[in-house]
Amino acid sequence: MTIKDIVKAGTVAAKRVFGNTEDEATIEWRLSVCETCPMKKARATKAKEKASLALAGLRQGPVCGVCGCSLALLTCAHEEDLHEDSPTEAAQRPESCWMKT
Ligand code: SF4
Image 1: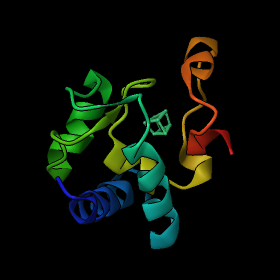
Image 2: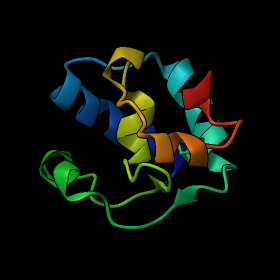
Image 3: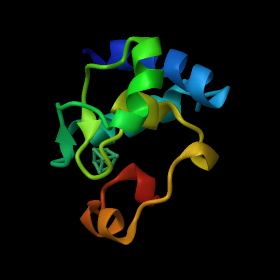
Image 4: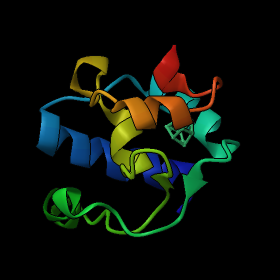
């Protein structure tokens, strides 16, 4: 998936799941941070996400290796819709992670 594909698919998914999305500049900035992050992974998503992601056609694509969330969905979500990290997740998140800003 290209960044453009991720933004498009994530926007559709975030609108379905949360009702709205972040602005495009913010989404692209978040994705650019994830792109060089050592925690970015290409693997299956968490079971709890599968139903909503399947609806949006997002079962593929990169995920965050810390929380397992689809980067397409995570980077498009408004700050108030982002999940709170567990202490373990928070400790694993690199200082450069946009979720720490
Ligand atoms: S840790 Fe942060 S920057 Fe890295 S992949 Fe996950 S959300 Fe992106």
